[in-house]
Image 1 (cartoon, helix red, strand yellow):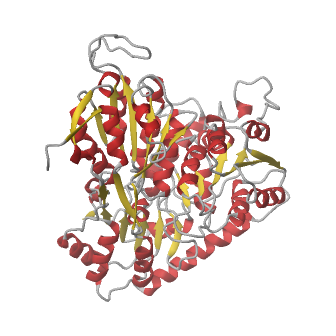
Image 2 (cartoon, helix red, strand yellow; image 1 turned 60 degrees about the vertical axis):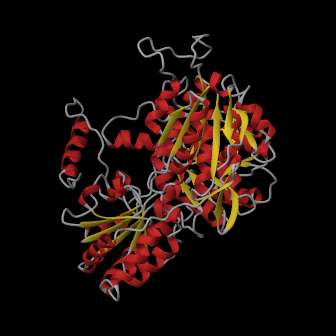
Image 3 (tube, one colour; image 1 turned 90 degrees about the vertical axis):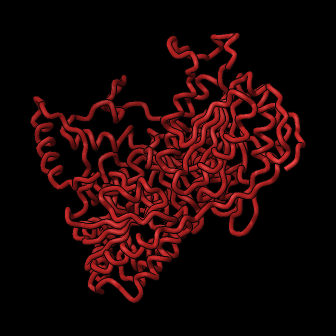
Length: 619
């Protein structure tokens, strides 16, 4: 430690610090922060951008079209890098900041790292109210950046230049902590950004961050091994934490050698390939009937790296009320859910120690034979659903099968909200580990194209992101087609046009409510018999992409073959059936009016009442 200092503005110091942070990926030392997504305005253009411009060759800044989509792209990047490398998104004060709040929710729900830096109003308040300031009469220190508190793992407003000396290392430690991972937010008031301060030179020394692998308590491992040894019908659930820990291969080996069927969550899909001998597909509301059957009769369930959201648990109706749980998770909060026996630690380390503690134990051979029979029946059903027919409009299942067939081994499929997550999770047959990204923790419409832009940056040279997106999500957020063309990060986008918000229409009508305001034909439009549909080809071409419309599955297959050869983002559109869905999976706890004049609504309510009787009561 020396007494040497360097005089910098707070904004200059933030950027210099971030540029000197490194991490290791597969033994290679790389920058922890791979780049910045930025839209500049007052609040980040005069001070923060001054330093970003100076270091653009070291820390590249990419120009997006919307603050939400930029942050979603940053999240897609971090996800593709398995949380080992991080992107930054910066915005001005006001609506630029609030646009980014939804993306922060995506990162928080999915436990993904992203550094969000927003300009803020003046701490001295001399020019108040400034442009875009939202005034709070009783709490003048409140700004729109306070809205990030609910969706950030780490939140700070820097009101003095010295505060970053402690705040920045804590923000980074949070984003890299397997138990606490999520978005970090920094609000930078404009008058604080401009202030100079004598920073100690040690603050800017290069630092290499190693993501910790906390080992579980030996007592917890022994207890988990003792419980698992009592199981006659065990089941493994593989969550997103398996992928981020790099434990996919270890869990696959564990499942095979211990004779335990292995299901997965939506976030966990892709840790193993489709034809792994212990694999039985995704579990839950959008899961396979094979996984559901095995969950319903399981006596011990070992959940690894999952927060057990309702789409995995069937709103906690998928399991026997007598089933016992072992939750392996780096986060204490997740490990202790629903009276589970917790094993709090890194997935890979925990599996290694649990495997050793089990010694020669394996589940009865009949359990794996049961799993193989159930899963073979499911795959036979999928083959029949995916086969081409003479129907005028193809189903999601048929479209996904063609895309799956034409995708190269290292292409990453990207999807999110709407009908495609469930259909893709059920129908997609993973060819290589970590090539599947379905954002369903926050179920954010608009993630698909933006997230794929980040994925394209992260995987450049190793496969092409293939986006599966519905017309509803496409219309909500599509401008990063243009971003990807500008930046040269190619993706293939397949737009399934079913004439509106098809999956929400299904939920609405299944609960007894007539189709209303979801499909275009059921909305307040001029021509209900033939509402105007978007020409997605012309729209994409207007943003510089290449595009084709496909009239059939054969057309789609040929178009995908062409799209693999193009030199830029390519968009393919195809009409799809709004009423045909892949069967299977668990039920869902949804609100249903307790009192209604509608017979169909009353019938749906009665069905919900019966369904809810099956729920496990947990804490």
